[in-house]
Image (tube, rainbow, N blue to C red; front, side, top):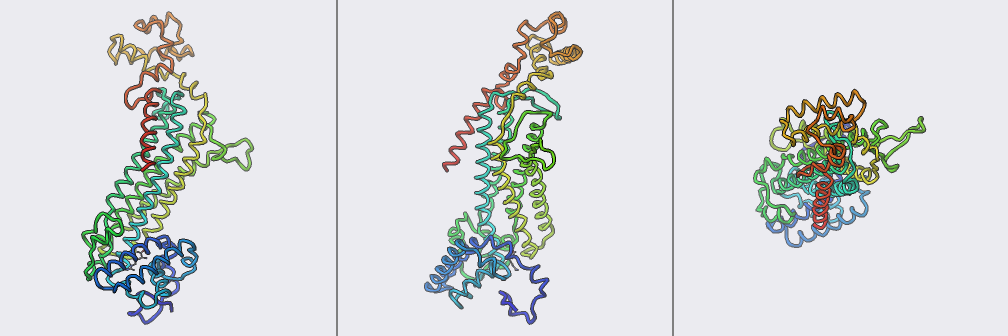
Length: 463
Ligand code: ARG
């Protein structure tokens, strides 16, 4: 029978089926560096509390640091070990190095406050990685918006063409979403900035640990204030996975927009060869697989969030083994989101919008709102203007032309208030230029927004 951290009370061994069912090392090995960092801080705290002598403290710290370096260079021992979890692994590895002294490190500590601390340390790095990925994708979208600040395309509501927009404006819509995602992660990181170590199994440690100093040593803003909450709180895991889910929802909306733009029917966009694939049967095909996978993986990340919430629902205080189920969901959600952010950035860098965007934006009565607005400017109440423009659209449809292409006598009859420069007034470029209000689609406005984003993103990457 393998040595367990809790063997004393037990006479018999584990059933092999339960043994592997119970193990978390196959996935929580990813917390090893965090576990070592936390253990070093705990050794220091025990030293300061007089539980360990200065010599013992130093010896433990030194061995833990060496272990951290060795495992960073070669993690093989982690994968070869049959330890129950990462905490047992570290203790066993420490025992190989410092013998019985290793047995003193767990004084006043539980795997419950240990794993809660490890997870928060891991999340701190995860949030930083996600932020880097979001920053890079935003930069790619801003570059795209810069390139296509003036290119008109049809804007849609209900997937029906509504008014012309610029391609740059469409790209910047996603930049806004991703900026909110970054803010959400930053907010979650600030809220999780409390250190659970010293909470013990559930009631708080019985040793004179300076928890404030311990929290500081691990770069937390403060110590947690309630041990029961501290060992069972996984709000931060949910918050980060929710933030990931929201990122994925945004990526999947971008994917869906672009998949549509790239259809033969729309023909607005061509994906680069770097992110498209062919068909094994149909030689002419170029498929938007990258976008489809972004869309598909959204379900997977949102599923992790749902899974986590269900694990926590109805969980009694304080720690329960159910909480071990938090890790795979979290790791998968973060890994998937990071990978999706990287691929999305590549797709954006390789996307080419076509001249068909311009042609499509110039036809199909997308300037009808502007006809009504011009009537309003000539003193017609908007409701009447709307009605009369509708009639003009109907007439134009009958003639198979655009409103501004109606024969002069028809225009004189239907829209007498409007001048002879109607073609110029209703040209797509003019229509776009009018929308220079803050938040509008005018090229001038898009260029200003691009500049503002470029400044913000440069500042953030210099942080
Ligand atoms: N592997 C466990 C987890 O991930 C560590 C904590 C175990 N604690 C316990 N009392 N069994 O939650």
